[in-house]
Length: 117
Ligand SMILES: [Cu+2]
Image (cartoon, rainbow, N blue to C red; front, side):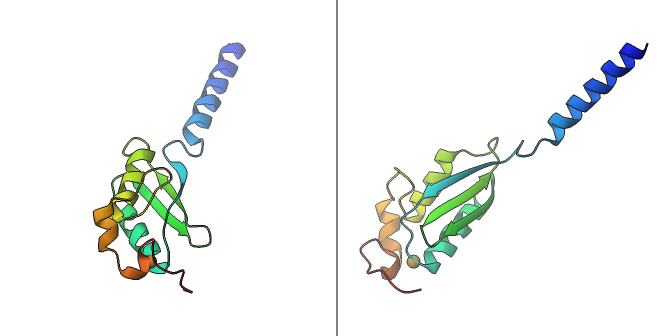
């Protein structure tokens, strides 16, 4: 009887641990983008934020790396890169969609001079 009780307790603890484990339904990915400035940052964060399965998107303007937290059951790293490419920016090895890039304000295009904001 005592053995059964400790078995049940062990089972309970294991199950509880698995359910409570962090990061069970979100994944995080870092993607190098060709963003230029604050406007690029808010444009990208908005478009990613509106896309399916993305919980949080945040661009670091120092290195232009986008950190995205997402639900892997609803989206994938590739879809996230596609969203960035369709916004007009490179995403790791995925090239920007040129028609989208050409619609960006001049200061946000890749040919733009680096500008101080
Ligand atoms: Cu910009």
